[in-house]
Amino acid sequence: MNNPWLNIPISDYESHMALPTVDQSSMTADEFSRVLSQFTPESVAVIGCAGGNGFDAIPASTRRVVGVDINPGYVARARERYEERLLNLEFHVADVQADPLAFDPVDLIFASLVFEYVSLAETLENLSRVCRPGGRLVALLQQPSETMTSLTPSPYRSIQSLSQLMRLIPPSEFTGHAESAGFALESGRIVTIRSGKSFAVQVYCRT
Image 1 (cartoon, rainbow, N blue to C red):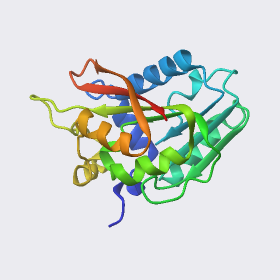
Image 2 (image 1 turned 135 degrees about the horizontal axis):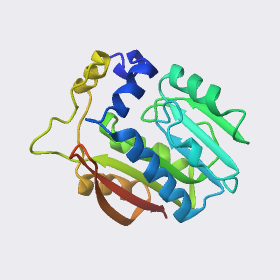
Image 3 (image 1 turned 90 degrees about the horizontal axis):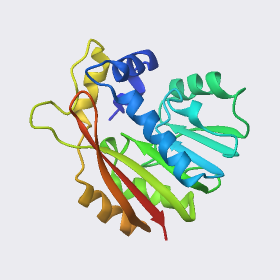
Image 4 (image 1 turned 90 degrees about the vertical axis):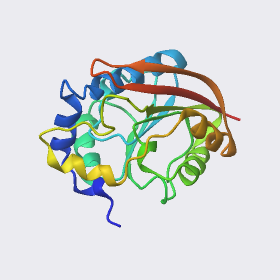
């Protein structure tokens, strides 16, 4: 099956995520900034980097930055925006559930709203290979709502193609797969945004 992420223009994706009824761009950037401040990694990989949302928060102390996305158009946009602003920046076009990740292990892996669209076991095994022992994986997982659909309606019709792929994951299920891949749960909390949707922010340590 052709992955629907390959057919969504970056302009549609970014405009959808910035809608007040969606409001997930700022949440993702805020959480990325929070974990950078908390863990001060020298190296970080952003899985599902899209156009580089949150890259503005990367401090000079983070000396290596890796962006990964399945859509080459997204990677091209992120490179265009940030290659002259961030040192030691590298990008990889990859399907994280199927393709080997061709970069050296990092101190921190940040993945927001990625695991809803991939096979957990294969993806977490891949990520464990590029996370240093003692490094961390931070996962943002959308949680079910009693009043809203999982995929928020919007004027950007291409986004609706994701409904065939999207599956919300209970944090306990995610933790089971993460532990099998060598990640131990350190902390978890729930973030609720203005739209009313909630997200589990899970922090794991690579054992």
